[in-house]
Length: 339
Image (cartoon, rainbow, N blue to C red; front, side, top):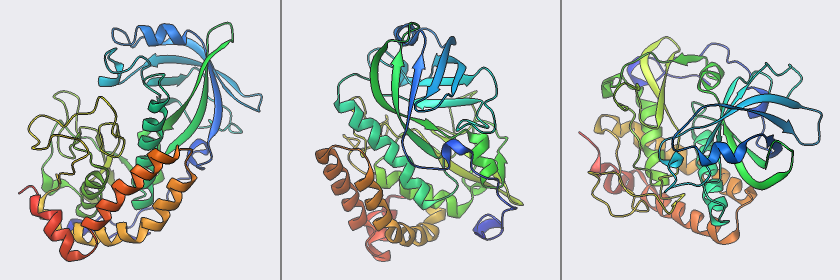
């Protein structure tokens, strides 16, 4: 794919790297993580210290030593989740023949609570990654997995859905780009207009208010629930979103709108894009309309229960009503753009 130059988009990319095997397919996998899993979960709020464990791929002889640790911020709190998101560090490089070839450190999104309803929230968050994959290649890929969690004796204590998130450097390399080197804040004029428009409209689509493509927590770099890529001969930065559990599409029980946003529920959409990209958003809306059949097909293939699937599709249908025409995009979405 070719991209435009300079202020209207990213320039043509060099030959892109191949996707790593783990993220080259959307077929769910089945893995087993064995080790002090319960201890990691119980101590998550106070410690992210890694513990020795193993990861095995079902149906194969693949078993790897890993270091397992809790990660995240809100979901590491006991009041939010009894089971935290995890970080998987491979203690040694998996061989080239492995599904995990090329992986060093991976984020694993987990079920948060044992209640079966949280399985649906996880699958809906996974669907958000898949939606943005269909909209833009400059996106984090995800791989759904059935995860058997076992103690050191090998006895499985629980089995739940989870998904791995592609490493940022791998996502950058796949797009012929690199991780941007920036501080805590950038200017909106430093953003690639086409990608910024796609991201802002996507976040509106899923009802996410917990993000920024310009700023991050002090001392942690830009951006909040997003990352910036650079390259392709352009001085502009391409934003790439992640972490969608606070979105209206997922509708997690703990999700509330951020302070300062004038809505009472995360189900209420509120546009947070910049006015300077309005013309690109109108063009992006046409891309979103064209991708609607593919998005609905993807939802039909997910292992969601029928009621959450129907609610999600209804929620997305309301978005498509908002962007049905160029005029409706301007009237219903861009009327609240940030100057």
